[in-house]
Amino acid sequence: MNAGRLTLIVAGLTALLFLTAGILTAEQEMPEEIMIYNKGYKRKLYQPVRFTHQTHAEDYGIECNECHHDYKGGENVWEEGDPVKKCIVCHSPLKKRGEKVHRLVFAYHFKCKRCHKENESGPVKCKECHTKEKK
Image (cartoon, rainbow, N blue to C red; front, side):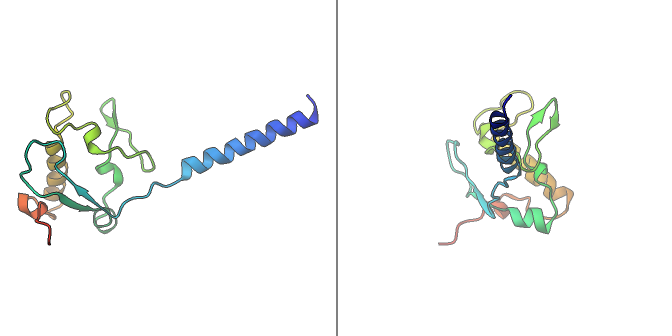
């Protein structure tokens, strides 16, 4: 193999290494606040819920994978930096998908209310989360 070809191959592999490292270490931008809407439901019973990442992650020390998940073989394999899917991708608002994938409203309520009760902080009643928007 001649030196020119070898140099070209090494340069290409080096560029690929830096590109891969950049992709793997790129952080996803975490929105400071999200609104959880009742999309997909036939009727709107309650107002959307305002959720703040900072309050949960920084103030209460809740790890990302306590809410974000990707189950394989019954184990949550989601890690910080993995893509974040919207809940509705797996949790249908209208019907249960399989034995362990709850409808969207139950998935939210189970996860949020359980954590609030366990930590003895945070709202657990409907109108404590589903507050009316100020006009």
